Image (spheres, helix red, strand yellow):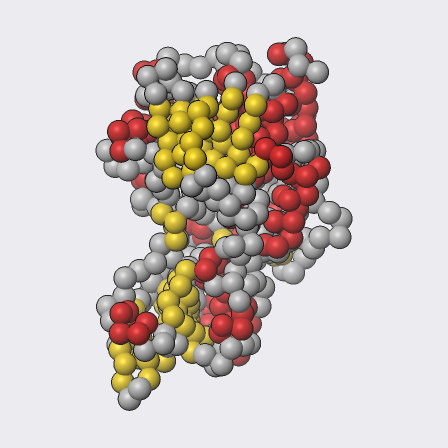
Length: 488
């Protein structure tokens, strides 16, 4: 088939490579000037690093360079993806600086993809533009006057130059990974740095006690099983049944270590609720140096509040917080999340893809139920994004070959709606329109492998209960699928 792929991040590049290797003619459209998706140089803020180590965050047969640090920086991940695309000859298929502005499906099921360079017809469309498509920036009262007076308000993905914070009063909005990363990066350059957190969340140290890498606790199947999935089986039934006291003791122990190690009580930064809430919709690592800088006063955290309004007084700019405090403000950096959007699809097609609550109604995060010749890849925010993208690409290849054994449409709809309802409830609505599966990364990969009829060996599964998941262990999945389909 002639296939269009929108987006050149992990999911787009994996789709390009594997669909090409299965005999398809693939074109990838990328609106910016480099590959990388969320790791593109056009959107990586100072201080950005990966959430998990390089040994768990790579394509199965293409490890990250040995000289990379444990947690690679944003530019290093972009360079890695650029190397991946060149290693496997993908760049001739990638059209950079080419934004898809419209797609339209004809009566024959084929797609007309329109960019600023013209239109082209494809047999099939794969959407891999990611779930972080448009920055979400709050509309602060008084922002117009603030901006006219020379102040700046931007999203963390738009803050690309550390010099822009030099000798300025900086407010960072949010308490997620990007907010704390940015705050730590600007803390030594800005005149003052304040973090405005409407809600504190639990964060995991990169190394517990400064020794044990968190991957041995949270990037294993055992670590994932500590949090209750929608359908529990095997050992998980024990952990969330009669063995729940054991499970609670494990989670409580981690909470105690984290609180002590990060000095949260002394700093007044113990979040509400227990450590289990770390997996409500994401798992955030503690930024290196962040809590030390809070302790020395380089970073000021205003918890459980938000900006009420921005004002200009005596030719100076201030933010008035909901708690009544007044903070000087020249630069406001918002780590306030993203909107998940597909602006290149018409409203009728969107209505067939999304439910009445605005959730992406995708079977196993890949297949819309009422639109033919269209699949998604990468709409499953995961600890193991690279591996998820590869398995998703193989699922698509098998689907195109007519090799999948899928449930009936009615059953796929039931399973999808059941998953969305469960996700919304357990995350209190913070499930990124049904696209954020963390911390259940391996559960979702297992479901794709079940559809593929390519389960992993029992020995591998047992090892992954005890040790971090290794993407390199999944190279055989590709080989087994190719062998089954008679592709050399």
